[in-house]
Length: 148
Length: 306
Image (tube, rainbow over all chains, first blue to last red; front, side, top):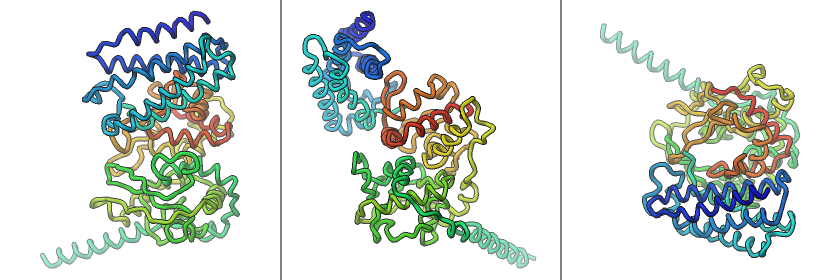
């Protein structure tokens, strides 16, 4: 369990330290990978497949919050070409994309606040905090990701 | 000599045109079937509505929650054949289907023929709906006529020649309108209960109309049934619609439970999230009973890899 928590935290850190400005596509993919890992941890605990601990809950929420804060910085003009699933809509509807990012950040921020220092005390508190955060995945992907 | 040749060609031309005219005549349900249309139940009809995905095309773009029941039309489908605009199918008697009889509704769903005897474009997926039962069609009619009326006709389609000739679809239907199952029972592999597989097959090949997006089409828009559910280019834009057969390019790494969970929540086994047009479909699937999602999942795992 401890290893799982440390692993998620390491993933989070790796994403943060690897902020090479010359590979925005690579960095934003890493951020999404860390989001997927946090969703996997959060979803596994909510389904009862992984045992819940406040520390694990906090790690999942913190990863989401860091991703929400940083993700939007890695979409310079022209990076919809090549090996990426970013839809041209991100630039055509920049206001809409920013609004979606802002909502993700707001939900993750609220979850961080609810976590406190030690993380949500029990699974029910975690579900209440994490649920709205995970609702953001679908709404961004609906408009701004193109499967290739 | 020449005059006889010209006369022969003209007569042949008239014969071909006449044959074309008769062969493309609008198809309607036989009288006996119309007479036997069962009474519909709106409660059951609501489940058919979600399974059939009506709101995904006929509600306004981006509709959420109760907005999905406002079937005003207007959504534009940009395809290689032109731009189709979804019509108003609310219960409005002037601008929607409020004045339609149950028989007219059944002809539209099962034969792709309008109350005026015109062919519908298969952007309306009647080639899948043709596999629905009369009971489901009647139930759907009962539910849809109970929804709020919305006034205002949607714009017409924007199609170029030759696709703007509706009559021609009568010939297309002779090739591609077939209510028989796509995957025969003996082709479904796996050891799941046959009644579950048949329910899944009905939902996917009928109201779910999954094949309309997930199967590639030929140059005149007919589905390539030997590549059933094997994935296809998206109708609009650069995207790709994935392979959802049981093969390695498709769902070989997913269990039945994984597929059912995805249909319920939108999360893949790796906790990637559903996106694009599939979001609307997944939100519809989430409203069905769990047994229906499991049946769909069981059928997909039993579809032969291409």
